[in-house]
Length: 332
Picture 1 (cartoon, rainbow, N blue to C red):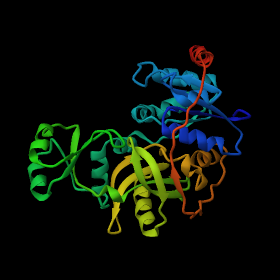
Picture 2 (picture 1 turned 180 degrees about the horizontal axis):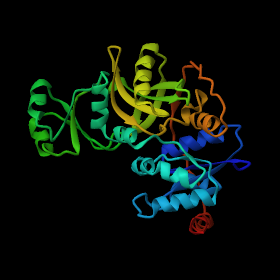
Picture 3 (picture 1 turned 45 degrees about the horizontal axis):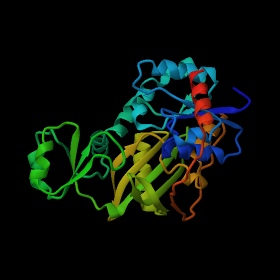
Picture 4 (picture 1 turned 90 degrees about the vertical axis):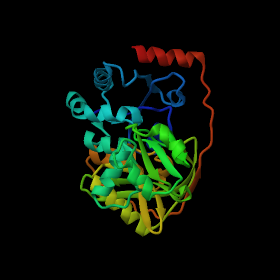
């Protein structure tokens, strides 16, 4: 391994990538950061010295490019953060790691597929006897039966996609009708979003829970804008049970919590957009590096502090010379 631990974070124009970078900038580990994104307008490409423009994941040569990049810069750890890349990175994880010395923070393809598809998420919950919102696929032959048992309003969602994208409240059959038969959409009972929570659970290599946080939040453009930490042992136990059954290194669970029941409606098979804000409770990127690179035992977090956070906009100023240097680095 290098003298410094070299860490690659992609998607640094987004809140997940930025949260990981904030976490790694707030550690005493001897780290050299590498940042990537697909556009020269991605803000944090101008905050990290070793920053690069990457091709689209849909590019036929993307995996070969990634292997070459990791080998060229001797990357030790890679944190993929962009939802549209996760399936491909997961599919080729073993191949990439076999051709390099990198450890990739991602689980196997089957688990990432469950996280990527809200209908598969729901089926996983039902199959394993967890609470789950009443849900039906829009191409299901039992759609009429579902409609007879559930009152409007109902919620339409695309099976793939995160945040509040492609989520539609339907108030009657007329509004629902254009979507009937479309296998890309699911229909779900209407849930009280006033009780929405997001959470992150990190599981160690020894299968011990190393950290959990739960946030009640308000959204802005589909991402957390303001949040307060919830300390609730009953809630934590339900979330931990789900995370243990999924058996992922880290699981982000978004859910409704009411009447002492967790009703998950979305899993994310990557680090959360709130990772950076939650680093004072437990620093997930740091934990992963200590555990999987430095082979240290991770003591479970016992932080029970009630904290709040609010996001704000910040400008990053850069020059044409900065853009030119970024492009030159990326092309070399």
